[in-house]
Length: 250
Image (tube, rainbow, N blue to C red; front, side, top):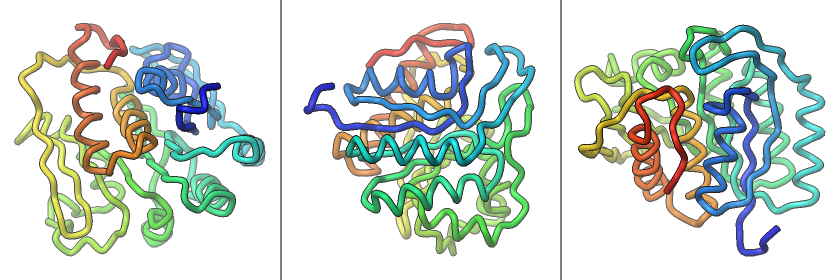
């Protein structure tokens, strides 16, 4: 592998259609000229149109995979996708932080598939806040943020938000301003406005966006720069075809 390329790891589900999950993530890594690794949290049977079945990977197998990769490579950023529980996620985060405290972590909190399959239910929000403190950035949409932090948008809880984690609130489900993303960083909010491209809905677009951000962070961009440049990438992806599977290019 090239010594000039930083190492980025995705820990997420395997979607055999390649539109989402670790296959989509690694495609995105390659386009950003970073060296990508992948660990599966689940195997799925699905297409871009239908979700049939999921089998979760034992957490001990995932943890051992993480340990082996970190023993051999200096991984600068980890992107995390679907997980079956907060305890599962916390084991992953704790392992990474123990082995490599400086590694940045991006979590795309996929709570439900586009075909309405539930991956993760948030039951204990007190646990969630503690878990989020180990993550540098989360990338929820408007539906997900209300499950993660009830009232964040509806009741303007972002005004008193004390979570140290940066939040990129994706605007795909924002009926008042479709495509307008907002980056919440402590006391600052950055609006990321859409361009004029004719974008079409894509299966796994959240996976692609979060892995593009992870790639940019590995290339020493700030969180703000990483999100802005990832938005350009995802809009190119969304406008590349009119089908649910797009083409990857920078």
